[in-house]
Length: 287
Image 1 (tube, rainbow, N blue to C red):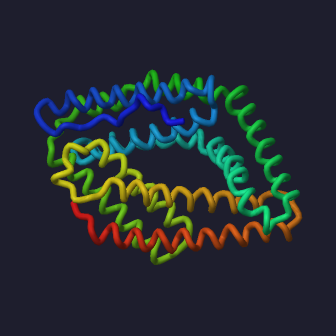
Image 2: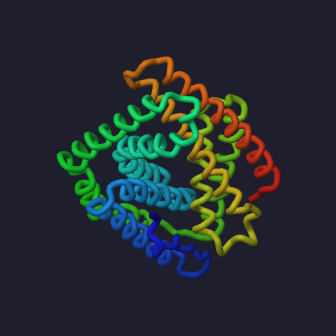
Image 3: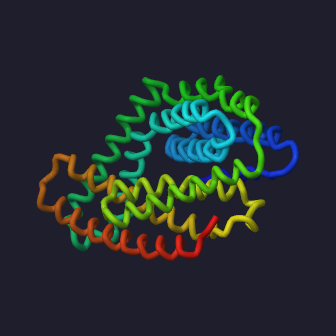
């Protein structure tokens, strides 16, 4: 479960802004390390939370981008992104295992339950194999903890630049405009790739809204709307990845294709809902 003690820190855009940004950077780093260290007790939750905390850290960095050296901020973003990507495969197989558990009651009427059971077995086996390889042999969490602990470039970036309200708000406006552009591209293509890109850009907006919650009078955007759309986009992406994974399994094609057919029908309905919600959201939002 999400650790209840953690509340996303708030950026107060007033005096001594640089000092406050340094404090927030330290808080985010501490929470990131805590999520990594959780792997000793719960690998699934540690993987999930670590990737969330890294997305929050990258969203924080993107707020600061207009205030400082873009080359420096881009390098930091690449580093944080690579940390998250190191856990992508593990996160995906965890999702597949949870996904097949969740959908079995719904689809058991239309799909051979023996096939669903076999998919569960494969997912569980792949989780065990990957956790053994990445966590036990490669010590991925321990290595990630060492990298994060020794990393100080974000503080160096903050100390090397001067920040003010306008440039940080401009960073948020850029994120919002990128999310709107990504939405338009998703609507035009209706393919899963652009919808995933829209989710990534809107997740930046979601985290930045939390960081800038003291500025709600200057930002005409509903945080609950963003959160709801991001959640639906996440379901769409998980569904798309799961379908691709099913295609890779060496199972009898007929029952698997029947399952995929039903999943794709669900995905079409999700995308229809997302387009309607996205159009309404961007129509009534402004920065």
